[in-house]
Image 1 (cartoon, one colour):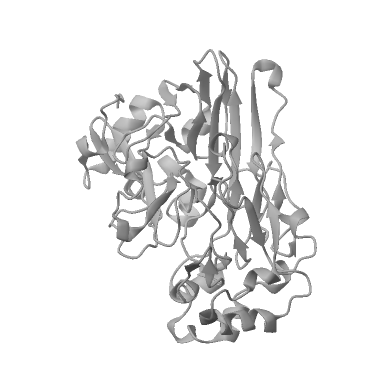
Image 2 (spheres, helix red, strand yellow; image 1 turned 180 degrees about the horizontal axis):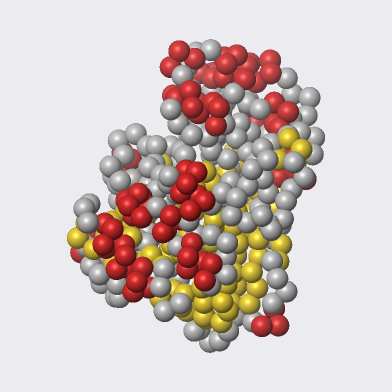
Length: 426
């Protein structure tokens, strides 16, 4: 639908039935693209970093009791695991012709037409998503359960990755460092003691870990069951479609971390079992003496195309436990240039700088977004459109057009690999 300054999600008619016809009409008009509305997610235990371009007056649009908005989710069919959440929290909406419906409903109705035969046949859903994660300071040292651990509470595991886009990191905020893993030689007894000391204040878990300085334009790949305390850079996070976690740190910047956030995705009967909680950590991966070498990501150019006025770079790559679960690229198109990109599968894009077009659909990175505003910066690209080729054109005369896009599992066998991830040789 055409966007105007007054365009608002409140003006759209929400559709729950007849989704198939609506999606088919949108795909026919756009050539296989789906415009998405911004999807905002609050976190009650964190302080927003104010770099999502969200209007400051809307930081607490869900209500003060729900916490500030510090995340924007992209191409998401995954509900946010927040207490007292709205029914559609975390779900991306497609917008077209004055109407809106969830991407989840569209995928459910059209399946392979949107995400491709391979992913639909194996998962029967879009199993990944990405987000901007933006906080003023660090968050607690925590882990995300593995597939085997999460199934105990009828959830899915959550490996994830990070990329720090320079366009969203003009300031580093309070602590642009991330503690990751545990120091080599750390014992399980030491971690258990931290759990025993939970109610004494700072339980000292960070004393057992090492912080790494975060650099805009770089990233990390983090497998499940690995401790990490993300720092205060605004982060682009392609990840598996799950919201499970366990917080192992009791106090962050003077704020209490409730025990409930440690055990929320563990079986009820294990909520006081300290040995079980310690054993949720994949020990070899956490105490890896080569942790940075085995997890750190620098961009890798996919093709040498700078002479043509554009460059496409891998920003998230590698495998987790032998599987490529997600990957991501950063495309930069210089002023006045255009390029046609053929990808192996469906992808979700967010424009972080400049303006232009994706096929015939306008792309523009906004300077400020109201909570209900519709934008021109987010698009889902169906598999058929991706394989046919998508044309990106920079219509600005002054700045590059920069687009981030992430992909589903096993889509990019040509992506670079890391030798080790999660302590397991690949």
